[in-house]
Amino acid sequence: MTIYLGTPAEARYWCREQRKGGQSVGFVPTMGALHDGHRSLVERAVAENGTTCASIFVNPLQFNSREDLDKYPRSLEEDLAILDRVGCKMAFTGSLESFFPEAGDADRIPPVVPLPAIAGLEAAFRPGHMEGVQAIVERLFRTVGPCRAYFGEKDFQQSLLVRQIAAGMNTIEVVVCPTVRESGGLAMSSRNRRLDAAERELALALVRALRAAAGAWHGGQRDPERLEELMRGMLAVPGITTDYTAVRDPENWTAETPPGPLQKGRALVAAWVGGVRLIDNLDLDTAGTHSSTVRPAFRGE
Image 1 (spheres, helix red, strand yellow):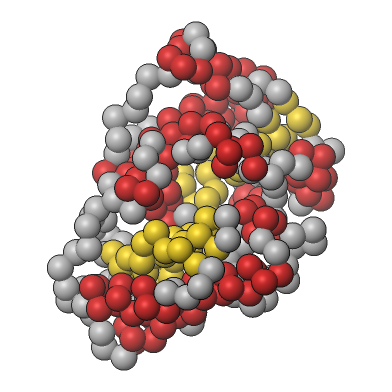
Image 2 (cartoon, one colour):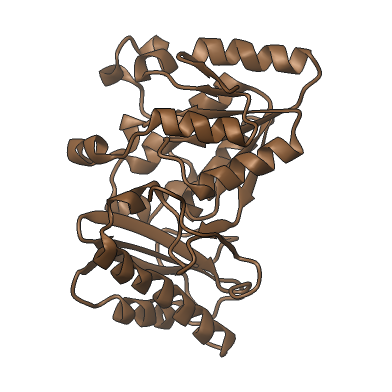
């Protein structure tokens, strides 16, 4: 049975006791509304550690609007049942006030010093979002303590950020796992629950754009601007509003498009389908080999 704890202090004590008992701790941070992508992270954490815990916390700091925060899906009972089935021993939540007790209240949480991975893309289109991620991930890591923390590759810029956070703490090993996709190729996301059937079909344009960039890359195209233009053209269809199409050197992150030719490439897209914002990315070097995992759509999505 998965234990559910309501405060960071309780979770900190639980994790400390597990380590005292000789158990290594695996940790999967989530905002709930769990799908097969989350489940794959927990399964791996369970397989690789003595015990595993997960956080379920919809972090207000990383939302740009109250409307988006209010619309974010929440399904606590279902989430706990999923965690229990895959062997997660503990799940915890909290409030901003409990994660940042020194602030006194949520309005006084001190700003973070942005790490390099925050630059560009998500930060440009969602001001404050990446700083909000950095703030809460630092607190989650300090709550759980020494552990292996598991993140999905779908949020690629975020995965760079959390690795930079962990590098500054020396007690956290970050494990980044391949994107899990539905049978049609759409990257699994809690936001997919808000897509109707027509929008879900339309959203596959993001996957096609990324695959087109990978095809051009394997055909010898190494100019990131040309690859970005190719993806942008494929997303220029009614019903889709594109925030960005981007190609970056994954080993040398830059806010702006890097000069070509590139030796390594990561294609990234962010676009609105109806009223739902979706992001996705693809490793251009390994596309078509092992860059993602395909599973049937999670029941209920």
